[in-house]
Length: 190
Image 1 (tube, rainbow, N blue to C red):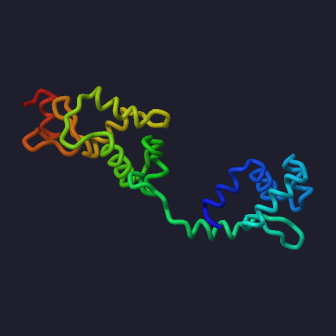
Image 2 (image 1 turned 90 degrees about the horizontal axis):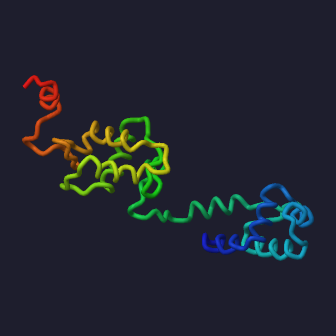
């Protein structure tokens, strides 16, 4: 049995219904027909195919899904994570090009935000605040995350720098005033 075989088998709606009925506890073909609402002949053909490929087995006269075979298949199947897909540590927080949530743990938060920033901004390019907001809004739409909060986190973590209203991926360019100097200037104490 291969992943492709399982997908092909379950792409047929009747077989999916039959497998679902067995998974939910229907132990005989008659019980499967009653649970699935399918005619006995359709159930018989579907069960034959599912048993033929090892998804359903009969033990002691009772039908059941062979979960062990499915687990073996899952273990033997290589990961097909695309190179641009976030690693396992980011997956709960990033789905595709959407930021779903922000981790509470600082090291994970930094990793997630670095992932977002590296895909939203070009190194060395300058961005206005509205441009930064637009790029972050695209990542935050549909999630429970506010783009303004993300912008603040990116700056606080030093992933984005802001000098004179211009944002840039990475640290502030050398010669730019640091946080303390900017604070002093903002307070009018220079």
